[in-house]
Length: 289
Image (cartoon, rainbow, N blue to C red; front, side, top):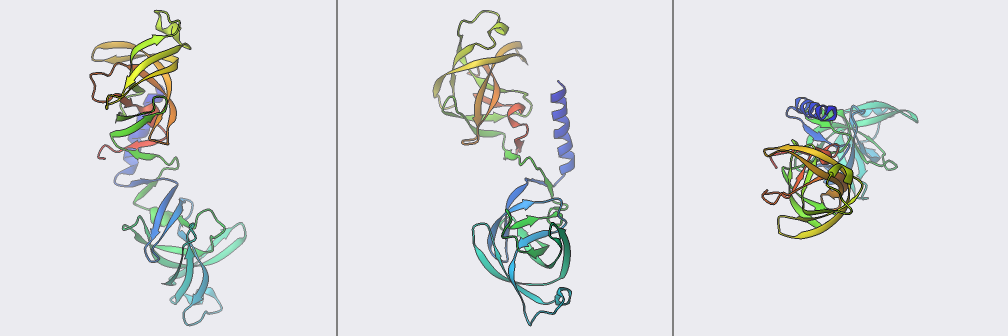
């Protein structure tokens, strides 16, 4: 019971924190409109300013001895993404910044560029450095995130109230109801048979259960799974004891194993209902989708 309460607190807190802000994961694909290239970017709340891979610097009109004295001049440089796509770019130096790293202190040129989702880029200050040897050629810092984004380091995906979900053990897709109000995922099951089963359902835990399931297209499959637990469920009809099994389900190619309770859902619109045990830690639900 305490786990359920905690989960609801997290959901309520997330809504409060987010307000009108969007949620972004630890990495994202970003476009730099001035060069027309896309970068797989690291989202870094530890960096105050965004940083772009850049090398082969040339100062238009000649470079001064000190980098600070080049502020206000036009800088020409090459940028390259992880796919090896390159572009030569010209931008005005608005200032320099000094950063500490494992190699010591490093001074970098700072320019302004438009960065973000393609067609929705916003103008931010960007420091330039050679990031060719790094995993990410674009690092997005707090100056891009501020006032608009919340970073979710678990990299949860967004799912709507209805989704196509695959159950590997059945080889079938289900037009599924996503229900954050349900603690456990539930699957349509009829003709249940427990191998060497007894009347007391609790005593059948650990035994093999066979059942027939059907998706919304009328496709059926006989499934064999081990009973891992039982669970009392309250409904309009009262309390009902159901078997729980473990099945591997998810969006096609992204399935993972969860506990599922079995119920005759013949009269229901959706033969598979996804509960919090499948969503938690993986998905955020957007009912507007």
